[in-house]
View 1 (cartoon, rainbow, N blue to C red):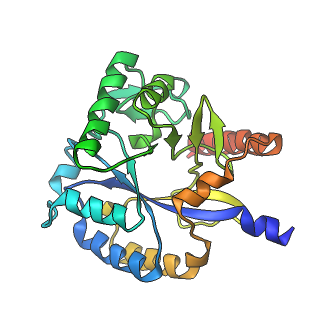
View 2: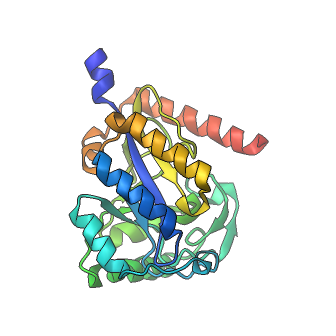
Length: 252
């Protein structure tokens, strides 16, 4: 049992909003820590950023795509985090695949529109000689048309969802993302979502300490794909986690 728990427990570090314009001063410190600890994170890269909030940050002094290629060569997983990171819809929870609701870049658009939007983003990565296999939407909001559009562009993995183990649904592999805080589950595969643009000095210090304390629990993205499990018990736990988190969002 001890070995079973160990083999099925791990943490993925996922960074959102990686773009030419971001808080590079903070991220450069984090990059150094990741390299020192040999941690291979997932980077949610916005291929063609048009988000007005993100555009207020300074551009990297280096070539952005050279940095992405360097990280990719170093074993960091490059994921597609939307196309423009530009919200143009406010959707209800019932119209969103994960029932988050709120601002969306994709949800409630036609299949043709989403096919085009996803294709534009994928083509940008291809033009930069970067191969991607994973996607996660800005603000977690997407729908069935998004999944179809992703599959049409050759992407069959989404780093989002509920539960404690990766699972398959609608011919897509989902890797759960439950928490926004530095928290580690005693069992299961989870994703820690990080927005470094909002870090102050204390946030940075706490996160670096968290990485140091939990480096033995952090696993690579490729290893997670070996843990896909559609077991009925995990499905029940997935539905329970969805209900609990949706209730928590409702009251808070």
